[in-house]
Image (cartoon, rainbow, N blue to C red; front, side, top):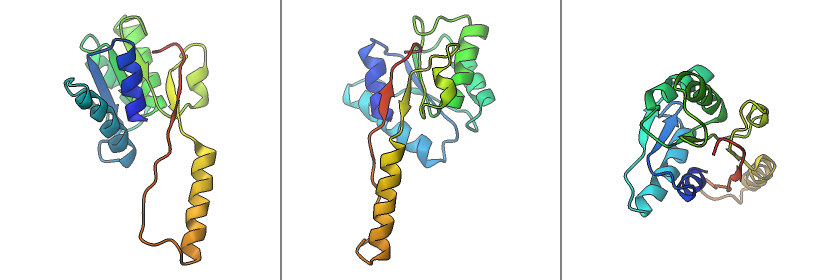
Length: 164
């Protein structure tokens, strides 16, 4: 998902990018940031600015966006709730036009992301496929066929709306 977010922002000509982590010590923030940074490094671009918001709340996203306003032209938030707070801060406090001056991408595709007031571009996790794969792995483990623990990643789908 982080790779997809970076590629989407770069495809729009964005070059001054930021990543907003809810909490830097969570695997979701770490994985998303890792993918985001990897694409920038592969393209020879500087690493993104990073803000650790402290949690995954609307208020934390609002604070993070106020910190970044005017410094970047693209922000990838670790989840949609952070991004919604960020959108409101960018539009209503910083007076920036989204996506003309700054593009915003979230992660999760929560119902509010599609609300007309937000129209958040986001990444949707393949939840049914994740559940099916988890059940299959559990069945393998219960049958004694699983081998050592492992991690699998499934691709997230970019849902393009009006924020990027």
